Every structure is written in C-alpha cells, then in structure tokens.
Image (cartoon, rainbow over all chains, first blue to last red; front, side):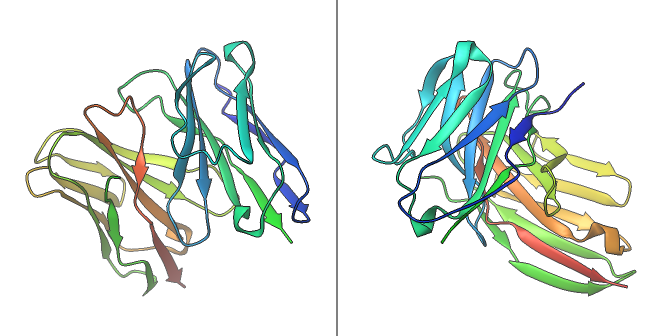
Length: 114
Length: 113
C-alpha cells in the first residue's frame, strides 16, 4: 500500500513570501489532517478534513493559513504571507476510521522562513 | 486544550542500556493512546495503539503499558541500540475528538555506540 505522499520535502522562503504544500493521502482514507511541528514541541493539529469538508480548523491561523481538499482526495496547505515563526515541519496524515491503526503520516515538509 | 506531557524531553544512553519514558494525559474521557517513533526526515511510525486500562503491548525490544485511571503510559526499550535513536511521541485521543490526536512534546532519545 502506498503511503501518504507530501511535497516538497524542504522549502526555504523569505518572510512575507507565500508557500504551498501538497499532500496525497492513502487511497480510500476519508479523513485527512495537517499538523504543524515546531522544533522542540509535539505536532499540533491545524485542520482536519472529512472527505472534502472541514471538521476542525480551530487552531488554523486563518489570517495567513488556508487549506483545501480537492474532490475529497489531495490537499494543499498555503501560507500567505509567511512569518519567521511559521518555520516548522508540516505533516500530513490520513486515516480510515476511528480505530487508530489506519492513521498514517507522510514524511513532512520542512519549512524555513528567513 | 488537552494537556499531554512527556518526560524526559531528551535522553542520552549508552548502547545496551534499558530506558523508559513517561506520557501523562487527562484520565477522564479516554478513548485511545498512540505511541510513535519519529526519525529525522522520515514519517512518524506507529508503535502501539492502546485502548484498555492495564494494556501491555510489546514489539521486539520495545514495550508499553497503560493506566487510564491515573492517566499515564510508559514506553520501555530494552537493550537500546543506536538505531533506536529517534523522537518518541505519545498522542491522546479523547472520546469526543473525532480521531484527532493531541501530541505530547516528545522524548528525544540518543543512543551512543
């Protein structure tokens, strides 16, 4: 079974620039998550999709972050404009159901804002 | 906001040492606890999904226990090897969370040969 694919692997941008990350979940996984992991902290949920609808985006900084899930499959996360504190690893995950074993992460995109 | 804490934050051990980490979480409204192993530049790898009070699970040299009444889980590594060097994350799911994980800050383990 193919894993969760993310791109790019690394990105360096200057503050106030824009950036977008892409995620392709495991086929058939209805739920998709974006997490932000700042160095020294645990991953924090930014947004959760169920198919192409948003379940929870309470921790997404909506003034600069946006996310969409195209046709309930792929997803993009955008930051515009980026700030220095957005430097982090952005992890995408998908899950099949409530059991937990279907919860699979991608390898993440490491963003550095300079 | 759920409080999930891990200790220690980092740990340096010698090859062959056994070690353990702690994850504490809210004891009420428990649904599941996950343990992940995360190596740099790789995907977090699921180690255990624990759901029942008193659960003990084992995978090779790694094992975990769960106490939902007091809100803690221990992860043990027996005879640490350099390839065990990684960040170990626990993640808590309460009953009403819709499968959303709340992570602890992780324990970064470094095993010296």
